[in-house]
Image (cartoon, one colour):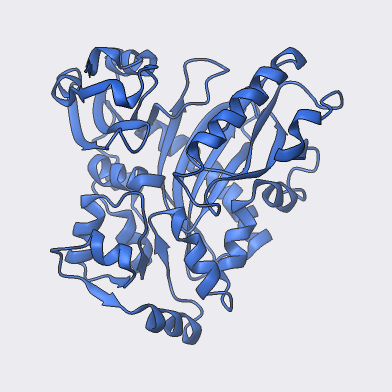
Length: 390
């Protein structure tokens, strides 16, 4: 069963729903999103009763905006508790104390942030909303001198985005200070099957311009990344499974892997894969299998077979966020054709209304690993060369 919500449903997910006749909860959003599709809708009350009668039912949602529906309608089920394990980052760190007992974190009330005493904090640290999404309000602070300016910036950013996402998705009434986790950052989709065993989908390296960078411009995957990290990630997931007892449950997870090889989680996002239908769709375009169907049917990818012809390629998810400094109301258009021409093998481009969200779209690309100049260029780009001003 799939529960759809805004802000975005990809054409690939819509086509998957139609082709495989997947049950979709018949919300107003879902009916509007799937117009002109032949869909096997299930009325909301029937969906609720189905989960009541079959507690092990599988539920996938494309968006954390649907968390409120789950909490309001499925309070009798395991879903709200499983969501709370992860969505609130303070509760999440409390959950992980048995695995990482020395990890430093501290709660900060947003209304009291101006008076917060940072003298007992360990630098560097990360400041971010306890409930957040899409790197909104995430800041790295390396010294006490940076605190005042960072507080000013996070207050402005949270105020600007309050109308974009519900409180279940971005809620800055509480912030969390936590120690910086060193190492290379990765993101991946996975699920726990009916037996509580973890199944790992594509693993992506989150590439940054510097240690201060917290943006989401590029995530890249390759045969080498997947085969080298999958065993370590499975060990980590088994530890999460012991703490939570998850079954038939999808997750999108961000981690760092240090020089010691230990997997340390940044955050775990419940009941979905990557936001805006990104990482799961990229898995299809890059590796040829459908994570939505694999989860709902309990299938596991045969990575040895999938990767046998992938030695020379890097597959990237590129977020075309508006980091130009040019306000949306001063932009006439974005040159999507030009950006496509700047890549060796663009696999898929999806456009986003930049007047509603601070992004122009997403690009999936295949790059020869011996010629990655295009990835370095877009990583450091402010995108001004693609923007036509009014």
